[in-house]
Image (cartoon, rainbow, N blue to C red; front, side):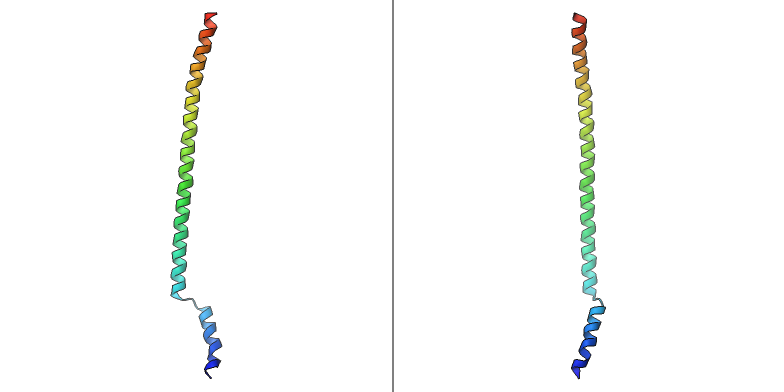
Length: 79
């Protein structure tokens, strides 16, 4: 007679969730959220550094252009 209750016990174990599964799911969700925050932080930092690099290159280009323009003007007026 004990075998007749086996299918209902198995069904109850399948349909009800244990607290261990909930704890594991919560733990994995927290790890996923932390990983996403770290990835977003890295992407944001790279974006800011990239923009600063573009500004530095632009400023250096302006300085080099001014120096070249001075040399061209000196050669033009010496003739």
